[in-house]
Image (tube, rainbow, N blue to C red; front, side):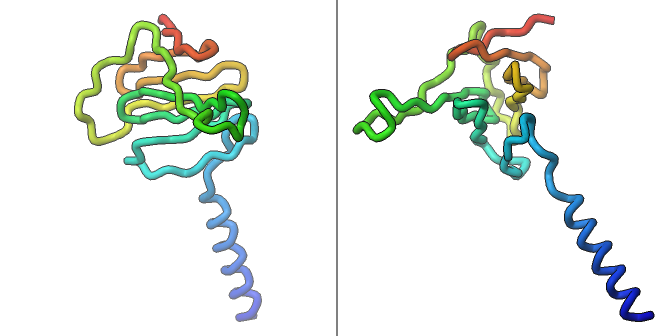
Length: 128
């Protein structure tokens, strides 16, 4: 009986640990679980790699001009934000996040709700 009880407790502990993993990202892509104060995040959307500064909202796409193995061809290029981003107010917590819906990719300011949609290499504002 003690053996059965011990086996049941180990099974429950295993299920509890399994339940604490983060839910899958959209399109079943894996995402890193970041600490709440992480400044940067890398996001893979389709064939585009995006680096997001979660404090300022500045985002960059990765490009390999002239081929993957060319000298000096691998660079981070900044996305243009139509209408600009609000001035960053010395916050100690991340303000921005990117949400990949599959068809649409959004950049959102979590404090104001201001939202942009990715259009090529430009963030276009979404009006209410």
